[in-house]
Image 1: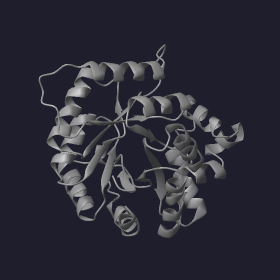
Image 2: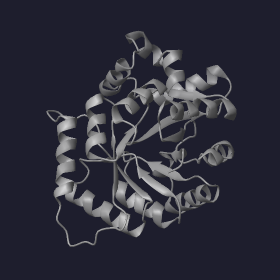
Image 3: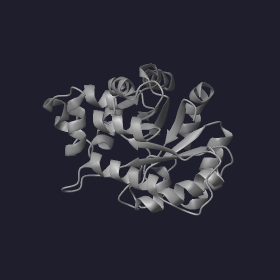
Length: 285
């Protein structure tokens, strides 16, 4: 996986040909991994398969495949095929995928993993096993990621959370952390873009609860977020400043950081920023 990869929504807005060109260039430039969400329409496992087929070495991580988008048998079958076809290159990141009335995320995820494990199939077993990680923030989901998966993926968290997660996961489980970045040195412009990006996360009950657990108070959520909260969730500045901040996650116990470049309009490519960051990060991966 390397120490740094690309985490992006960009491919949701782009035609397949542009996506193919992008991942091939990322691979040529030495980026070891790309993380893709499942939120805006593209189905997680076919998306992962397309990226894997378009490249020869790149690792592709679902960050995340939502468990309510497909049943456990379908998820197991798809992951088995990708593990067989692309040994060591696919990581199945699973997540609850949003609030659902009367459904408890922890119980639903545990049951889903048990169902996956119980699937019987004539499909050949892959030479290298399926790798699964869970979207996990709270202690109990992190414990489940440690005990029933290969580790955890954390989205929009602080360096402090990374340290807490590593303590719960122990030394062996994988910990991947997404972090948003913006290559902008003007504080006013950077925070304006960051607040626009964070708006839905600072108005979501689930995310606000997550941030409260990390020590932020009600005042931190007002007016688009306090400078402290915004700066903790979006690393901005020149390349050297951003890279130094990203490395704090590694120092706190992360195995890998998925770098999400923000500030580019839908349909545009962040490739110029990925190139600049790659010059500083790829050698460290």
